[in-house]
Image (cartoon, rainbow, N blue to C red; front, top):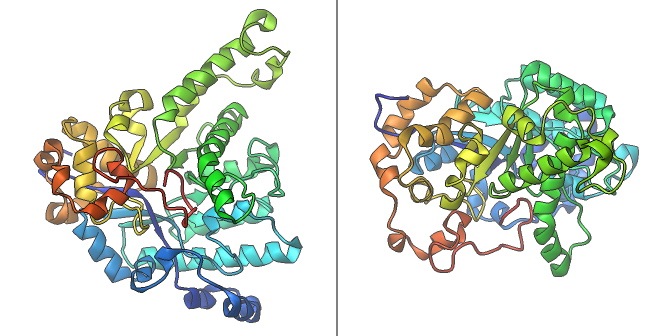
Length: 425
C-alpha cells in the first residue's frame, strides 16, 4: 500500500437494517397480512432505533457522509433493526425459542426480507458495503439455498452464524448435520461471521437477567470458538473462513494455549495429564493443534480495539485482525474513530497498521483497495496522524462512552444495559 500518505479504513463491524415499514416491500407476498398484524403490535426495543438518529441504519446518503466524516471508506454491515416477525434484533434471535413450524417459516421469511433489502442497500454504494446476510439453523437445506442466493445477489459480507445454545432447538455447531452449510460456504468463499452476543441463551428480561447475560456473553462466544475448532468443523472444512467479531481479542492467545494443552494431554500416551477420563477419541480426528486451525482459518473482528490488544498482535496474527467501529450503535467509536484508531495504533509500523485497518478485511470480504483509496485520499487520516497518537484530554466527555477508550479517559466504557445485542458493551 506504499506511495500514499493516508490510511484506507474499512470498518469490519457496522450495523444496519431497513425501517420497519420498508420490510413489507421485501417480504414474500403471502406474508403481507401477517406482517401488518405483527407491525401493528411491534414496539421498538432499542434506543438507537428511536428518534432522528435511527435513520442511520437505512439512510444511504447520511450513512456514507457520516462514515466519511469519521475517516471510514467501506464497511461490513451486520444486522441491527428488527426484521419481520422477530421481537428483538436477529443478532439475538437464537436466544429465543421458535414457536412451531409456522413460527419458523415466518422467521425465515423475515430474514429473507432483510437479505433482499440489504442486497439493494449495498448496491447503492458499489464496492463500499459488504452485507452480512442471515439464516436460521433449523432448516439446513434452506440455509444452503440462502447462501447460494446471497452470493449470487452480491452480498460479500458472508453469513451471520446464529447461536445454538441449549434450548434453541438446534444441535450444537459441531454436529455433522451442518456439514452441507459449511461445505457451501467453503465452495463459494463465503465467510462465516460469529458476532459477539449472538451465541448465548437468555434467562429472562429483568435487569438481573440483563446483568448475567452481559457477564456470560464472553463465555458463550468462547464456547462457540471451541466447538468449531475442537469439534472438528475446521478439520472437515479446511477452506472455511470464520470471523469472531466484537468479542474482544485479549482472550484469544490464552484460549489457544489452553486448547493446545488440552489437545496434547488427550493425545499423550496413557491418557495422562489434564484429562482424567479416556477421551482420546474426541480429538483423534484432528490433524492440527487448535492454534494451527486458528492461524489457518480464523479472524478477529477487533471492534473497539485497545492498545493492549494491539500489543499482542503477533500472538493473534497481524493478518487475522480486522478493525471495526460498531457504527451506528450508541457506544460506537463514531464520530471519534480517528482518535480511536490513533490511540490503538500509536507507534505501530505503518505496514502493520494498514493490514489491520484495511488489508485483512479487503482480502477476506473482497474489497478493492485501489478503488477505496480514491476516497481515502480525501477523507482518511494520515500515516503520521495515526502513528503520533491522540491527546485524549482534548476529546469531549461523550467519547468516554466508547470502549475503545476504556481505562484511558475518565468515565470511559460505560456498560449500556439497555442494548444487549453485542458483546463487550
